[in-house]
Length: 200
Image (cartoon, one colour):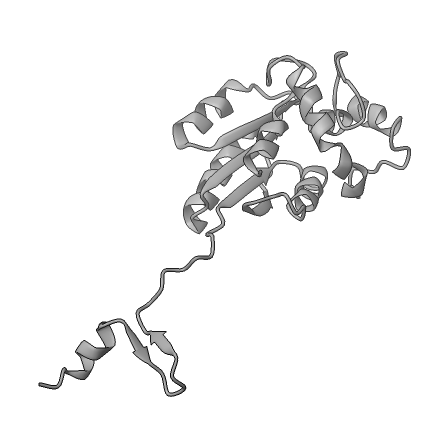
């Protein structure tokens, strides 16, 4: 009795016209699925340019998308949550400066809607400073942080960040950040190193 054609296709390897055995059953994909990470910053230039440079590094495993969410830290957290849900990201981070904002509302909101929150006190430039050395003295504001950064990068311009100035110093920055007080209360402090760890 001759098997039906459908039975023959499902039976496993068959011999092709050139004498080789061919398995027509669908194989499971062996390509590793990359996770997707959203990084939402409330800084329009410096933070965006830093993370856009960072995501190009060979050691960064997930696919990273960087967006700007203007306004308060709470707005940043909510914006990250909306984009994560809309575009189905595996993980979302809101990158926020303390500046003069109260930190508790954003911290509470991020815990409620499962958005990771990375604080810098008083500002993101503290994280950049840590690429070049310890930063342990109180930093009054973002202007003071930028002045300190110019001691290392005289041409520093917050609107034109060159990631090459930081690329080879990231591990040093992570170690130095770990030695500071816990963010967001400590000044200076930053938890940007947690994002670095999440991208490995």
